[in-house]
Length: 105
Image 1 (cartoon, helix red, strand yellow):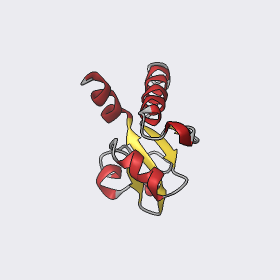
Image 2 (tube, helix red, strand yellow):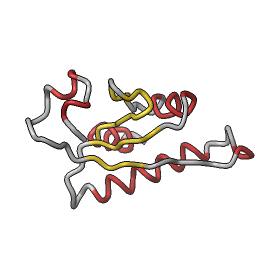
Image 3 (tube, helix red, strand yellow):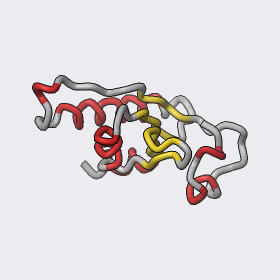
Image 4 (cartoon, helix red, strand yellow):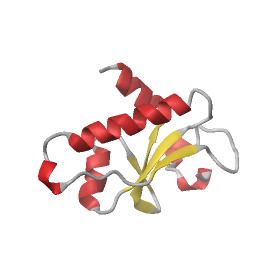
């Protein structure tokens, strides 16, 4: 992801590289029949754990998701994801934040 795409409050803390390494979660989906049963949360936690595991070998600053709609964006925001200023349905979560959250479980 480009440094310019990040909110200024985040970007000013990072080194001035052309690109910042990130892992993209294309989309997480669960069947409507299991809505409200915590399946989405489990899928997200599993994806984050896998990315953090890969991050032990690769440099990954953030986890990026593309929300299909505002309801999905709200779901990700509830877990600390922040929107990119120019693309409100594309959100990111710094891996350091994700690791600290998982350590707290």
